Amino acid sequence: MATAYEPYGPEAEPRGSLVPAALRAPFKARVWREFLYLMLSLPMALLTFCYAVTMLALGFGLLVTFLGIPVLGVALAGCRALGAVERARARGLLRLEVADPEPVRAVTRGSRKSGPFAWVGALLKSGTSWRHVLYSVIHLPWAIFAFAVSLALWVNAWVLVSYPLWQWVLPTYSDQQGIELFEVDGRGFFLDTPFEIAVTSVAGALLLVGTPFVIRGLTSVDRLLVSGLLGPSRLAERVWGLESDRGTVVDTAAADLRRIERDLHDGAQARLVALAMDLGLAKEKLQEDPEAAARMVDEAHGEVKLALQELRDLARGIHPAILTDRGLGPSLSALAARCTVPVTVTVDLPERPAAAIEGIAYFTVSELLQNISKHSGARTAAVDVWRSEDRVMLQVSDDGRGGADTRAGSGLAGLAERLDAVDGLLVVHSPAGGPTSVTAELPWRR
Image (cartoon, rainbow, N blue to C red; front, top):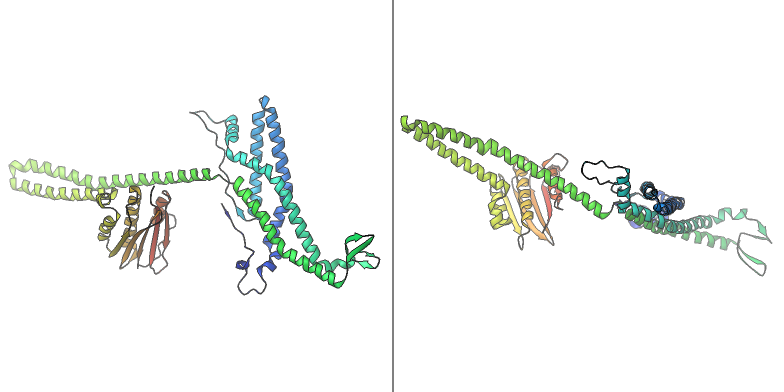
């Protein structure tokens, strides 16, 4: 949920402009869009208010019969539809981007299909639907106030500032020509002298300059109403985020399991099968040719060492023992020692973070160092880890060719998704020609 608008103040003034931004504000398209929004708010508020009150009164009145609940469902569905129109109106005129609220989902039990009654029940239980009703009810008094204030100020400002241009069309009363302010004892006071006309125009100009700020304040309340009552609830957004994170975690775990299975099948398992066959052949030759059997056993011994090394590397890829025993500092130093590029490691942590966060930080650095070894062409690299309030910060930099990309399909994109699953963040700065700096942020506790 975000708003996008141009400010009124000096920060909006184009460089080199001789006219202050406040003087240009009445002529900006944004001000007229907001004024049009306030003008349209009154008829829209009347429509939504009348619909909501009429349908709700009818629905509650019919609750003594079977028809009450379906009527209430239709009332809530209509309020949601009108809310969609209001979001579109705010998006077009106020440049307010409000995400659509969560759809109505009927809960089913077992293999039963959801019918209209389940849908009506879901509507009645939806807090979003009742927030749309609340908006329909409370928006009318505010729309009346905003309509009256904005229309009075805007019209009077333009009328007064242009008074010298049309003052001559006013009728003449007793040699007086102009707007009659008030009358005392049958004598009227008119704005007809050049000085009075000039003062009237200046007052109109001041009102014209100040009115855009009033319109901005009025539309700010509308922004709050639309974003707060017609958008998705924070709880729903959090639930959606958790569902997305859960999907990422499940996909990552499945990919890791497939990788472990592939490594076992193609590496250690194949080597152990060959070892069993060699030992079987050595057993058969033990009586006939002891020397050949001894050579075969010696070769099998070498295969055992290689299989153990592969299993050790595989176990380190799942969770290194040095990380569990000694923490991030020593484990990252051991990781850097295996990198093909000289790596400087600096770890400044007052204590160890959560074990899960340690593991994510370790594998993040591991993947980044692998990228440096394979793709960067760097001569040196550095790893820095420190704590900032309740966050773990880590940065991996190198002096390579740069051009690292986080677009979908790259390894960095997958890494960013993994960090996002634990409320982390990945920022990549890698201009063409280098250097590259990748900064990751993780929560201290999970």
